[in-house]
Length: 121
Image 1 (cartoon, one colour):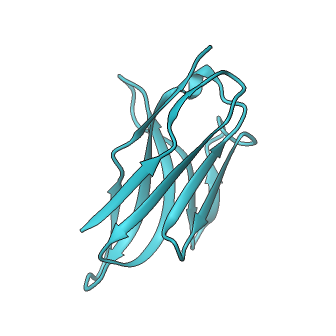
Image 2 (tube, rainbow, N blue to C red):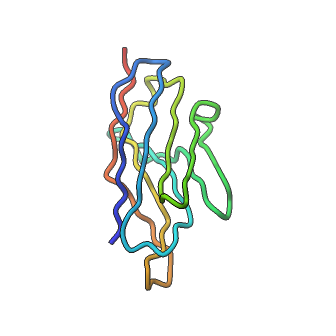
Image 3 (cartoon, one colour):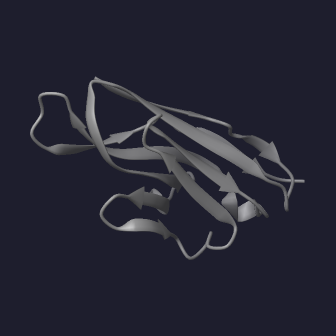
């Protein structure tokens, strides 16, 4: 009933930039928050950034000053501008959203399928 579709991953050299995008679609009544996580093999999924109506914007310490999240409520999209990328930023990046469905009475968590970001020379 809900799809989160990410785009914009790829290979970039250290110090470079990438912009990730995520679009939500489906039977959406309201979106209460959108954000990004990342995961490398063998490790837990890691919070990167989020924007919610209730708490505003938050970033992980590891990306503060380098990554910028932006949400467009009308378009149901969220972007992650990633600058000054480091090899340690290499991971699969996942879009996350807290969504109430049309006809639903509560908010659920939804995830995209993930996009690979590789930072390497």
